[in-house]
Image 1 (cartoon, helix red, strand yellow):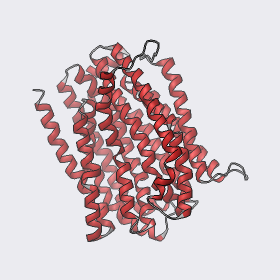
Image 2: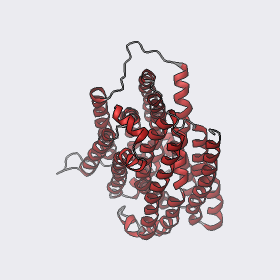
Image 3: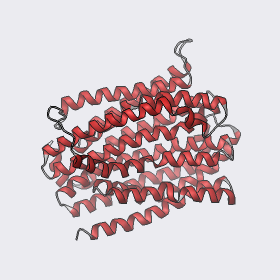
Image 4: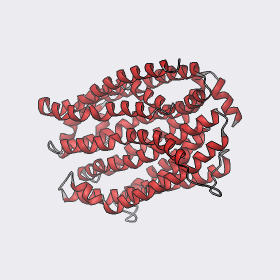
Length: 445
């Protein structure tokens, strides 16, 4: 571990960033492929099933937001503590992280048991969509605690510079999902055919497998230690975790709120519009997951060097990260603009879905390239412990501008106006993110 810390402070930035970022980029790319494959299989059941998963997405993302929010916080705090040579404090943060993960898991168990039917009835009266949605949501939300605990431990590994084990954990969970999906959805020789419920069960089995492996590997390999022998909840530690975790969680969870509210708006147009929007959100993860994987590799580097007061190195890490993420997101723009029809055909798209989706993907594609600076700088503020600025950027990207402008442009120019709001919001957010970062570094001079 000491060698890793020395590298974080002295190794040339680009190869170091690639060493830290490529494993999470690969694991998150595998995860995004699972999300896409999952919808491809479910779409074969019918558009009602695809619509149900689109409506369930905000709930799944809310669970992810909760676990990633706390994970990002403990990742930043552990890395800063290690940079300042405060190893006992790093272990104390690990203990608190696990306790908070268990507490949040209980909240989602209660949500999965009691809130599924009221939630889906907000968006549809179609009995088949309701049936599929409640079945799928009840399973994936009630048993999401495997994912929450797994992601918490994954962030602990990443805080020490270990990116290989998190890559393995994400990969094995996603691969199990992909293998089990067709088996449990369509069955084999009449056995195991469970339809939408099978898709949910495959997801949970993958998450639980990754969780169990995360616990075993952390105990056996990590230099960080979790021990509750003399553990006491510390108010200041919890405040520090939530001061970063809540803004980060809100940032991660904003798509849940945005998608739910936009689904309400799109429901006034057609079911196919909702289905396309759900497909788009699965597809965009194929671009943003690797981009976020690079941010995962960047965060501990910035946190460590900021804790060690190496500000020039922090600036160099930011510059290289913007260039690398710009390349990834530019490729996303090209892919969605040039190949919308072949991409949508994977999802058994109806004529109406194709008509909506081809122009939709082409318009939204430009949001990828213009989001580069906003995505990176939001991650920078998380690593620096400035959750407020990170949240400000995310609110601009995914809520404050997009939602009201979507409603207005839908009335003025139709569905294409809704898709254009994503490009407008990302452009404005990137400009403001750059201004906030310049102000931040002036305060350190």
